Image (cartoon, rainbow, N blue to C red; front, side, top):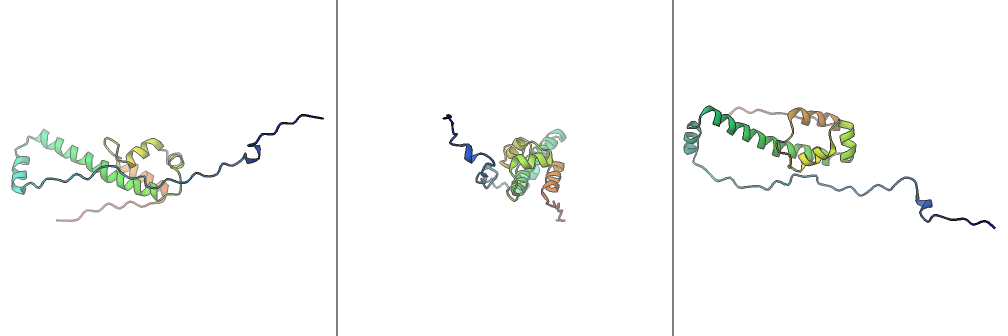
Amino acid sequence: MTDTQTNAGAARRGRKAPAARRPARTTQTAAVPIALVEETGFDAAFEALDPAEKHAVFRDVGEELARTLGADVIARMLNGSDLSLREIGAQSGFDHTALSRIARGQSKTGPTLWKIFALAEALGYRIELNAVKK
């Protein structure tokens, strides 16, 4: 008589069942109401700035726009994909943790335009930029 041991989990080995997909890789930035400023007062204050200060204002505004709008665009593309973040990262060449941080709005500067276009290409999206004359 031979002793045999059976492993209770041996029959279940093999392909792991896919985990339930967590939806909504969304930005977590809170909407902050902007105080209304009289336009003439704003214009006068802006004109009083020296060129270096104006440049800093535009840089800061640009970074905030890139962070919030870029996060929204990337979050929508990631949510529309059937792939996991790791699979998207492997396919597109981007670090999956960086993509997650950007999509949640936690990146300090936001994504660059080339990163948005490259990710869109990898996921089968088309990015459209639009300029409208005043």
